Image (cartoon, rainbow, N blue to C red; front, side, top):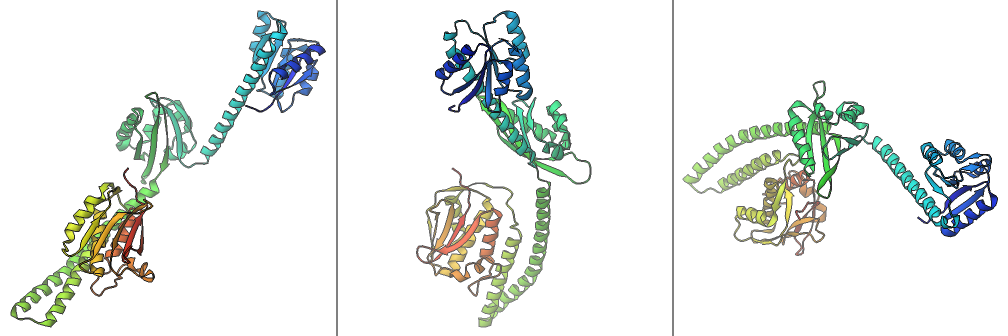
Length: 469
């Protein structure tokens, strides 16, 4: 608002031209007024920095309308105010029809300076605001045209498209003009089996709810085309006045998820078959072992028993690891105190102690999160002894939680390999427990780090967790 305003004032009476210029500058120190006494002189003074022209109507070498016509040819949007003593309806009508910005009768001129100065300042500010809005709109348009996502703005009931970028043609395979003419036409681009679901989601947004929805596009050809829309209502005084959002092509992601599920199913079937084929000889060997035990105590039979127990652990871990997968499909709010207590009860080690100090709720997959705690509890008992004390709590930086024991800990040189498949620091370990924990953490898109606990034991820090407020 403090920027100066360059004005050209044209009046064929030299003394009056200078007087008006001087008094306008006195009324508003932002105004810098150049006086001119003819149409030709005034137009010569108009330049790129001029933001307003004030002109009398009747001039020696023309009229104020001649000024308007000539100035607008080079500066189409420059404001022009007629300040004249030629006041009749015909002149005013011609001036307004020609596009004059404003029209003032001089009257008692000394009384008009304040009003004229105010009109000039207000007119220029309005033009500046409009110009800046046009610039912002142009920049947003240019930015939106660089996006691969469809960016859109509808009115509150989806009946009018206020903005949509050209990515619509690529994603929905319809011309942009088509949806601008008939806003509801994009529903016809949706796969028939998904149209009802999409229509219901649109109704929910118009009712004030935000929506995220995946659906298919009705494309020609064998390949499915999936998109994901994120839509939000703009609510003013309780009414939905705008609907904004974006839609992106997620066909590749969907294909990857489907392929991953196929591979996981295949791996699950393979692991089940392998486990079945292993369990049959295991059952035979275990049966003969029990029979041999019944006939007498033999130290060698204990070694066979230990081997069979380890084999059973490997089979169980193999099945568990095969069924984890690389992604988590569904998460829900999970109370960590409740879940850790349930997992601890399933371990059933009477000499061990659990300090369950956390009071947080996080978003996670309930079954897989339980596997994390059960495996970390078993790992602590296995490495720190049956009288181990285990603590579960929230990290100080509130990025996640930790499970800590008071055992010997994990040396820094072995912390990375401890999370790999088949690596164990004990003779009886299978080397799968921590690998399973790592797989589940990554499936949740969390991070796992092994550090040293307060008592020198192993501390497993799980971060990037989303908390339920």
